[in-house]
Length: 443
Figure 1 (cartoon, rainbow, N blue to C red):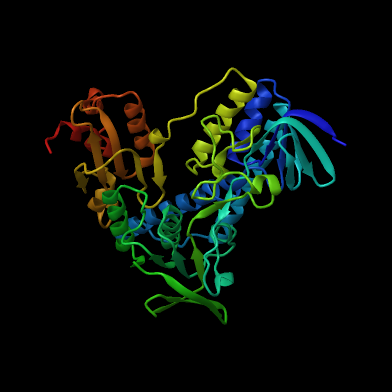
Figure 2 (figure 1 turned 180 degrees about the vertical axis):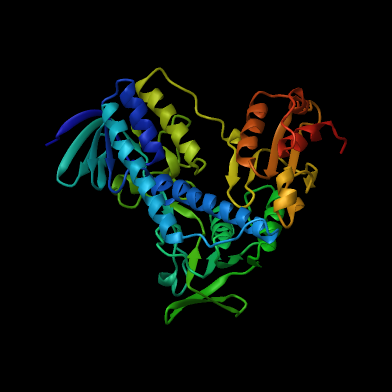
């Protein structure tokens, strides 16, 4: 017998599910949110937030090391254990705030594993709930590297639960997750090797930007093994050893597999297992976010969209307005800016193509005094449509890239000409000054 009837049941309390539930609740929808673990999902608990806090600590450590090299101040190691305790306390506060937010929006919550019986029925333990529609927002998890000894590998969830920093780390996978962990832990004092099975890292990024980041990682002391695969992993005493396809072995305190993510659809019942999926394994959805079963929708990393937190949050908000409000339009995925948080951050948006790449142009003045290699940081590309001169893409590796790239995305959305960058004068001295003024230059 059903306990309650709702308009919508949303399964998953991560970025997508929270955005949907709070938006729908605030505009009057009767919503039940089911979460089997902790509110906040991957982003808050095992992704963006804890990783960005570690990145900020590594950024500070890099600045102090640079200043120490110039004998301006003394370098001291980061107290990793204290950093983790402070980080986890902050994250617990975020989770607590979600409880209040959902309550204020009038959303009912239920803890436990949800199983979808049909397009209008969900079971959570011994309880049964009915709704007009169901929204899947169950996110994803790290993919398992299918090799001998994979049980000895750690993944991104494990990394972000470390209470102590390993001295020697091997990371398998050169996507953005692997590159970020490599940069962060090298900055925090670990010896890091990065193994990637392709010719260069960041395969999904513009090639020139990826090659620039690759060289920066090398220059910071990270050992890169490109076109290498891992054959086996084994445990030796208190360390882990991996054998590469070449036969070479690497020993480390921790070997981390950062080889992609897969959607969480396995435990939702037979009906969900029968839904149409894309090549990525994520659920196929229409422009209205509906799966192959009418009345069941999917948003966030479980759907075949860009697996990014801003996209998940935006899609959750849009779907809430579609189902409970006056409608809304999905965001344009071609205008989603992407950033890999290495040092400095590397970001891109739109179509970059073969636009001229410029490196080592201008750095803020203080870095000329407090950095041992101040001119090696900056990189950018600006791409325009040949016929209209409208901005269509940009790539940046520089301090503040994650902010500047958003402005470039806004200009692309506005169909602005490239020389719109020169309409306003940026601050001197800054990277933005060079980036903006470059639109005046001839290629």
